[in-house]
Length: 119
Image (cartoon, rainbow, N blue to C red; front, side, top):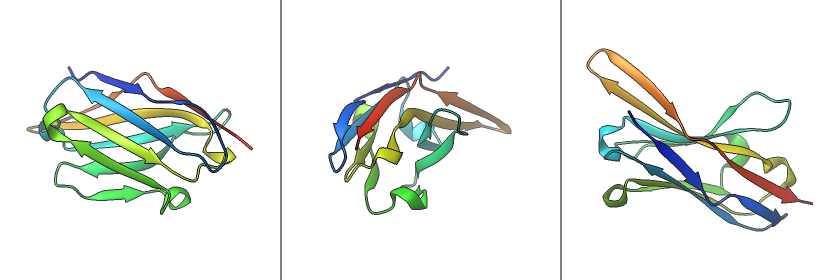
């Protein structure tokens, strides 16, 4: 019902920057919250950043001050600007959307984009 497509991953050196993009197939104003998760090999997927349709943002402590989540409602896009990247940021990053319709709640995931930070 909601398709999410990530892009912008790649290989960067420690201290560098990268900007991830997530394109949604629906008006993101109809989505209650969108976020970025990441999963490193052998580790559980974790929430990195989240933004509600009201504009409230949340970040995991490890990325505060370095990452910024934003959205472009006209383009149905969500972005994750990643600065001062560290080797420990290496992971597959997934775009996520949570949609509530009445009493029903649905969660959607993108295919993921690889971010590799060399030390």
